[in-house]
Length: 230
Image (tube, rainbow, N blue to C red; front, side, top):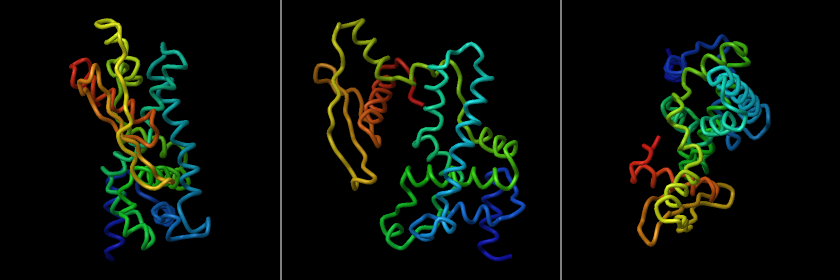
């Protein structure tokens, strides 16, 4: 058995799905920096996998929370399919090890970026869908999906929860400050701190300022003992 075959076998075991045609899986692991033509990289599979993921999670939440309104369901779905959540799932599957990138991307350790890990996970989901159909893709996605229950609702909009806390006790909102911008324009990250009357409460990082603010608010809620960080 070749080394590549052993590695693909290990990945399929971790994924919980055995491919009938491993070419689907192999293609899902090739970044566009290595395969420049659309048929030679994972971008089309990523496009497909994203749609399968959205439908799977939407249907799952629809049935799991029959009394929640559309807005709340959308917030939960957004949290479960956000980049950082999917990147964490990708790391548990060691996709950062399996993802194949060009030399330039390898030198910059691109396979460790959340954005690329999110993309390759969606591509793998797309590959499962092509190979085994929607039911199998749904099973695999839900198997790796983080647990979610009603007690976690406050962290969906952590900024609002934090603001409500300080409005009740001091009638003043916390202040968010952008303290750093990292990375190139096409893959920029923002670092935000949140303070209340100069007291440091938390720090967050995200690919948008809003995302970084939410992460900072979650950190603050955890520090204040209002809500455990997830």
